[in-house]
Length: 569
Image (cartoon, rainbow, N blue to C red; front, side):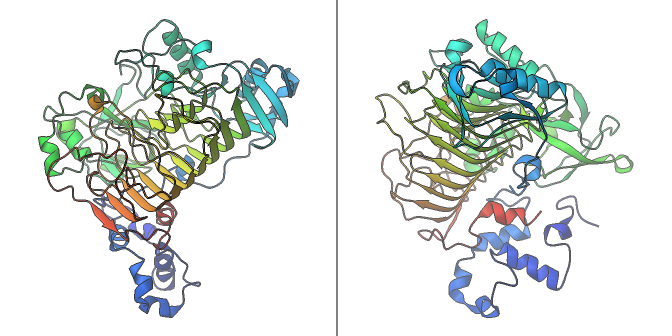
């Protein structure tokens, strides 16, 4: 019988013994059984490239103290293929002109609505340039917006979200524009949520962003947990299994205690977190209760147990009142493929005053995807806002320079950004602007960035206590800096991992994290030195971090931490 701690352990390690187990182990070491000569096992130089950390992770993949399990990040648990849904609408049939001579947004949105009425399908945008003077909205499940390729189909955006929808201010006051981190000219969000959000903006109210509504009053408890569970468990015991069915999408909800034990736990329960001043971090505490979307894989009424689709990201302790609840209805199975969203070039706005020339936003989206899409001359390129298990693949941000080329916030979990490029800006940065890079914030966890080429930007961990995120197999010219309000709390929670990262300009900031991120792993990064923005640890004392193969990017095995974890199941 497998334990609650690591269910299906045999499947994780290969599911067999003898020759099959040998082959699986070889794959986990970065090669294949057939391709690895027998003498390599005795080669000290070869062994030196396999960190002890990796062997430790293999022995404890779901609850390792420094490396998170991200092997199921991305749409449908990280599958490489996206659905090829039949074409049910062509935008030209709804009046869109491919010569840029007229606003095509109404025609595109009518075609999307037609696909929704048919229960889903693909909306085709043939080669050409289509002017869009309004937001392109994908708000229904299983609808795919597909161009002919990012080099053949272009949507030319002419207006900002501020012009189209209104000023979107900050709930924390001041004159900040929340279009600096939210919304897109292609906006994937449940249709009813998009309508309520835009209505709130127009009435100067703070709009809905997360999984349970503006006041977090749009949820109901399905069942409290019947007993404690631990990080890495796949099963939870509930008081009542009757509300649950296999495949249900639910939230695990954890409330913080008066001593902020939950927040300390997100930091790995290190000693220094107990001394941290949590109470004045009002932006951070506004993100709590913590909400983690998950699916029910199996219902076991006899044992009052549920098996989840992935292991628990945190302990579920009684003092945090763990419960499974409903969530707002997410957008599921939608996609955007094969196009360029190009904005009429305007100067980049001063920091936090973005007007909303934003690319593709996925909000309250689950198992959605973006494939072969370029965003040019945008304030913000690709935004994941309360997004779950979505995949961005083959994406590029280019043009005059962006505030956030990639943004991941408001409790976004288990997303995958694979094969991405941030191009060098085509215009010098105006005064008082900022460049971040690949952002993560707001209690977001288990997100992966991999196979990236960053000609500018940085690993922007933006406060708000994100934890358990992975950046692997990336080359960057490290020229950006992180952001984040002081009231948002620590830069890093526990289990950040930077694995096989080449830094072309030798700047340490936000890549070499073994001196600042609690219970983190820094493996096979370039030799770097501090210059520019230098941060100090948020916590006192021993951070319990790990570092290996410093100065040896490209030599570590496995070379790609995400790919290697995928093979573990």
